[in-house]
Length: 69
Image (cartoon, rainbow, N blue to C red; front, side):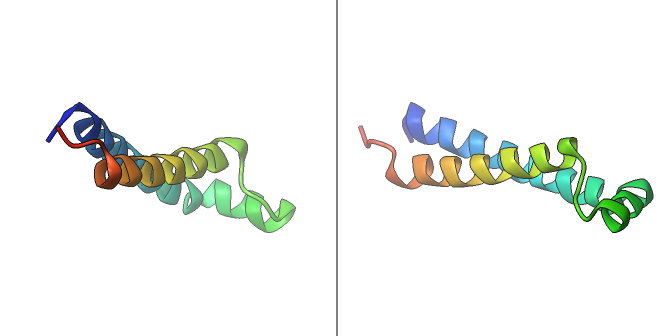
């Protein structure tokens, strides 16, 4: 593995962790009430989801297509 692929694996792990936190945040009682009243999640929860998806996609691409030495 080269540096690019290692960075990709780390980014993938961070993305999965952010998605885990986003899911837990979206299941919190106060967040569910807020979602029921307004029809959307809080900015923090959406930010966790966005960072998680970007990390998983970017990390996966770097891991798969990272330049080989």
